[in-house]
Length: 216
Image (cartoon, rainbow, N blue to C red; front, side):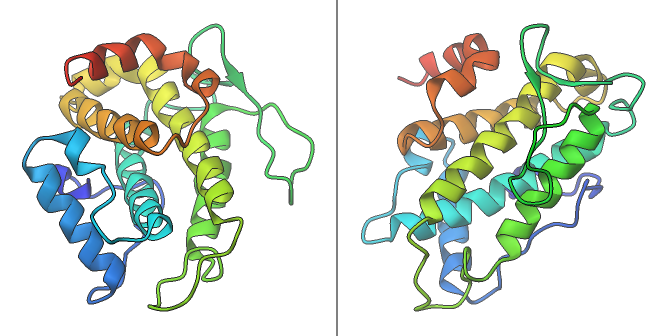
């Protein structure tokens, strides 16, 4: 969760998405932070008793956006048009951008451009009150879960790019513990609710196995 990053540099790639204080979602976020503090990530991702799955997924999706925003924000100096002319996760995986609205046909672009498109697109979804309602009693749309799955699938690609192309920089900045904890939390969450297809996780499969076997 965001609290993992404490008082570190608050440089983010995009503006942080805040959950309104005093709202039920804010209470859920506090609950998640408290359980995370116990160090048991498997427990921390479970749906709290009596809570709505859509709301739990919404709160955590916002939080993962903020975490990745912060992590990518620390390495933007190293992720440039020159260093990363394509958006890749190792030699076997390359991603082309399309959002189905502004860019319908997938385009090949540099990693910083792709991640800019991706984070802007995610931000637009999170800011859409009809998709991510912040007011109590406003129902989630029927397609909410499929939108959340697309967001998480795309956010995974930023982790994959950081691990494959910029892990040296992450280590130089001594951020690897933050990156690993954040990614492990993300993976436990998507596994708990089956939110990302296994084939999409292939670029980091070895790492996922390494991070998750210890906690079985």
